[in-house]
Image (spheres, rainbow, N blue to C red):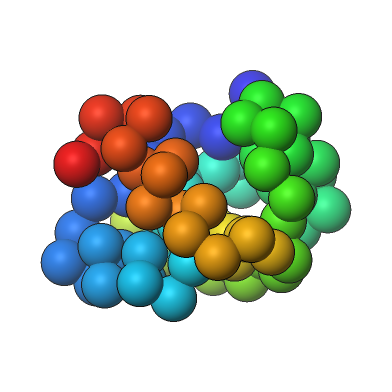
Length: 81
């Protein structure tokens, strides 16, 4: 499993305005793995993926979508809003 869960923090909800959604992903996953999984699972086109390792040792992926407003639509579908 590549995507573990979406991240719900103040900063991650601010990123929704920039058409970016944040997920906790498998530590071994590459940016390409994350992009392919998001495209396959949610049916959305990914523009870019940025990753970082958190202080807890988890990998966080910020996924930016090509179509404007898709991050907010996905957050609504996932029940975040």
